[in-house]
Length: 288
Ligand SMILES: C[S@@+](CC[C@H](N)C(=O)[O-])C[C@H]1O[C@@H](n2cnc3c(N)ncnc32)[C@H](O)[C@@H]1O
Image (cartoon, rainbow, N blue to C red):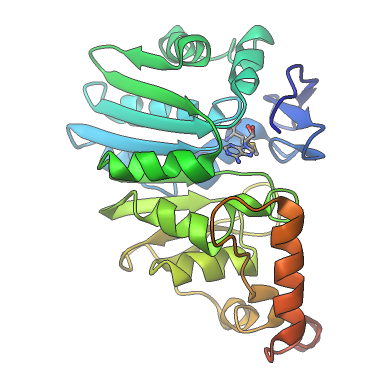
């Protein structure tokens, strides 16, 4: 798993680059734009321009990949407050992704300030300067997240950016998301590009309050989550709320945090069949 070590670079609509994963049969970003997605789905919804006014900002980048979300976060924070100290923990199962991004000159258009940090992080998995302490932890996020939690790290912003639920269900289960939530500061914000019903259900089961984020590129919104509702949170629409009461919202489960994607998917299918929730087709018809 996670062993693909050469990636074909593809240009997205905003001129930034992404890779295709043969293992997950999916692009690392939407074709609308890797760069704009990082700002629009992660850095801005987690309110980094505001958080940057503090002395320290702690970031947890789950599924670091090429490093776009971290790059966008650093640019957002330091353009507001160049003296803000960043503590970053990034997780990925495959160290070659970040290395390939540097080798393929993905960040050549970015200021050297960020490029140097991303390069060092990719090749040595750690960086320490006067402005940042960063670690890239390589391994299955399902086990690494438990050591992050045990270390007492509480993030002001969490970026949750796995491949889509059908391709990578193991990082969208209620058990994994519960572990992620334990790493979120009580004032922190968690952002993900997904608005899928089982993802939202898992975030709510972990005790988080959720809202939609503005669509970026594609038509569908992302999701923002926190321990308590924020002023900026718009309540879910009636349509979105009803979606979470249908069969589609049966969450993925992985009780021991070590099942294969197939086992997790089949478990959910069984639970959907046994569920008395409204069929999602009926909901779709009602709202079409
Ligand atoms: C959609 S890409 C992330 C894109 C990334 N955020 C970026 O800005 O380039 C998903 C990433 O999840 C990683 N991944 C897949 N399974 C994982 C697992 N079990 N634990 C940790 N990372 C995983 C892949 O290696 C890949 O880099």
